[in-house]
Each structure stands twice: as C-alpha cells, then as structure tokens.
Image (cartoon, rainbow, N blue to C red):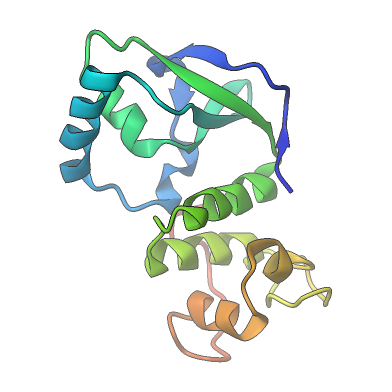
Length: 165
C-alpha cells in the first residue's frame, strides 16, 4: 500500500526533482512534444509523484511531464505528491503506479523486479530471501516474476541490477 506523506501538494521547481529512478523506465523522447503541447494548452492536470532520497526529491511517476516541463519556460514548477518510501517501496511504487495505467513495458517490469530481488534471490510469496512479499506486493505470480527477471527463461538466475543500482 502506498503511503503519502500528507494530502498537501508540493510546488517544486523542476530543477529540484531528480531522476534517480528514471533508470527503471524506458525514456521515449518522442512522447515529450505531445506532453509539452498538453501542458501548454491545459496546464498540469495531475501531479507528479516524488519521494525523498538523500535530501533530494526523486521522481517516482511523471517522467514525461518532467521532461516536457524542462522545455517550457511558462512551466517553471510542477505540482507533486510526496510519497513516504524507502528504496524498495519506491521501486514497487514505480511498477504499481505505471502498471495501473498500462504504461510499463516488459523490459521495464523486468528491471524493477530484478532490482527488488537482486539482494535477496528469488521472488516468493511469503517465502525466503530478501524478496519476501515482493510477488504479492507487485501482483506478479512467482513463476512470472522468475521469467521476467531471467529474461523469459524459467528458473534462470538473478544477476546484478541492469540499471546499475
């Protein structure tokens, strides 16, 4: 379950928002012009989602909005919701928030799941390793999670995080 710091929205300069977790998303620069047109025409309709990481706001959801805002002088700030999240929760939130909208790709899902389980081994519902509870949190059956992490090979081994962290 996501935990919001409070119900108030933050007004952040886009320079204040880091993209540490952007490595778990595929950057599609071609999508930003359409988002920029939408921001120019309608303004920001939904807040980006951020968490605090090492005294900085880090983007969890809103990669296209942030990228588009950087190119628009009339959008110097973004409205943001602050989520309480440690490293593991932030990664699960990226997966959950984007999966709900049908916006993740299989490769992105694999990166996130691998990052969640790389320290603890296999994804097992209520089972061993540091990945206890990961499959239920993400809504991924254990066998499906193994295939995603192993690049489609059931029972494959979990390597290091492909995105460097």
